[in-house]
Length: 562
Image (cartoon, rainbow, N blue to C red):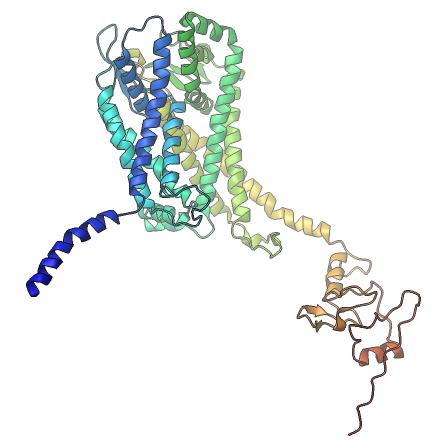
């Protein structure tokens, strides 16, 4: 009997193992599929575009295999990977490190959507599906999407290695996983409602204890600094786009001539147009670096700044390069570009001042903020510290954009092309740090003094010279009306008069207000009315519309004789 039981137990172990395999982390399969689908859609989009240009080209040098390998290389370039061009005239491989920033939007958006969908666990969209189904675990969704994405990206990189544009393995091995991990993590974080706990724990684990206390205070100073940094960076890049537009309009004839001379067929012009469109964010970052002061490089030793522009090497006739300022010393028109970092610093400082004057204030039940007392504001030192943190974050963001927007376009003279990331970041730190600090402290001082003057204007002195109209109205609101004592209504509602009626038959309020004039002495009839029991619900109100005198109260009946 014992042997039978032991044999039965041994036979059930495989069944238990299969059950555990079937009951593994829910949603992992759908997350893997979502990540692979995101990578496949990105590759398909680039393949369709390249094949369309290859078919319409009058000189299709390579076959379909070359077009597909070029599409895979462009997909890697969209993630920030550096490419190497092998088919050069000199035979020396030339690096291609300028990443079109607009191409980065496609894989980031696909990964973000895949992560948000993976948290649902592939739930059905039918009407009978449960709307309150639990979400898939964040680590499970994140791991599945990243692994599925890289499972398709690795073969694509191997396939692109055999074409004319080959990936640089060092940059491809770092940039593609970094984009996948970051975009997927943001998608999962947003799917869970952007909780602050995981973010604060991550930041707290990377920082020393003293710095962690300064950043993760209860007044939300880290969030204020982050919002100010994002706003300042947006103004810098937006101002750079405005400068680029003005310069292109100023050199419109040169840009049009370069576009027409570069190629003749409509397919070539379409390719040039698409290349110019995807490089527009890069040009905006270049213009922002120009406005900050360091400018950008048009080759090794050829810098273009607002103060001076050295003549660059012989460059191809590309439309966006027509917007480069002319060589020579700067003019007041070039110096006017400094208004962009001034505006960015002012916006960042305003965001910090807004947080310094509203963080931690009490809120009344009605939804309006209570009076802002000086004690509720941040101190000048704390405001300046948060402003410095926002300037550091803004500098880090712009340095990252500058590093992605520039890079080598070849060897020798074109080995350095675009803004230098550490120079752009340093100039951003100086500009935003100074302008934002002055703006934040000035706005804080102004908002600190404004409520006092507003309260003085809202409460002028009354006729008696002792209190204003607002104070007298508040005192009147706290005094009940004579003849309307606060009682519990028969229905259970607080504050109704007995019988649920008041003068005129209207429903009674908890309290009524006294007239502005002093209350006269009560007459005998009023004292008699107040001393008696309230009227019943089925009788009319105490006052009749055709009579100016109140109705006589009903005389209570004597109790029956025992």
